[in-house]
Image (cartoon, rainbow, N blue to C red; front, top):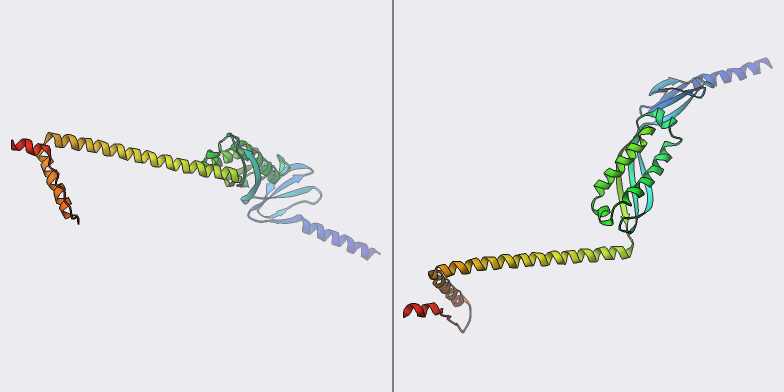
Amino acid sequence: MFPQIGLFFGIIAISVLFSIFRVLREYERGVIFMLGRFYKVKGPGLIIVIPFIQQMVRVDLRTVVMDVPTQDVISRDNVSVKVNAVIYFRVLDSQRAIINVENYLEATSQLAQTTLRSVLGQHELDEMLASREKLNADIQDILDKQTDGWGIKVSNVEIKHIDLDESMIRAIAKQAEAERERRAKVIHAEGELQASEKLLQAAKKLAEQPEAIQLRYLSTLSNIAGDKSSTIVFPLPIDIFNKLK
């Protein structure tokens, strides 16, 4: 019986001995608690954790890519849209990430969802579609400030999709078409204005120099003669007869 007891305790001793040593990868840290109190952060490499006295919680320091689920957002101009995004963050302070929040991954996800709805709800639909970079920066700045107490750094936020219903898509298409027509009419009107100004300048110039009118007349006759036409009309300026008197 005694040999069996010795074997049993030997197995326990070996198990405890192996449990003392832990290996942490380069991107991992171990938050050590001693009798329930925070002791220190260890790693990477080979570390020693005293069984029953110390407990270790692993923390991954790599950048986390987290999808923000699709959120129903009502814009400032009362348009309902569905928006989803992706955020990039990493743990900078392992101690705060474990002690200051129960589950930093879940907490960051929930915070990202509420912040996304809050920020986008303050803007009109046109701003959402045209100013994504600014909105991304605003959301990232808010998240980074609020997660700082958790030892987390939010490095980037990207809005992926802004989904609209069919009626809103048709309305935006009509608005874009009307805007293109307006621009075309403005460009045409500006062209007409510039042409009329140039014609007025030419008329004033010809009025100041009668000889220029005669040269223009001869040039016109040359152009008419070059056309393939069986009938040629020769217009005569009235000024010619005045000069012949």
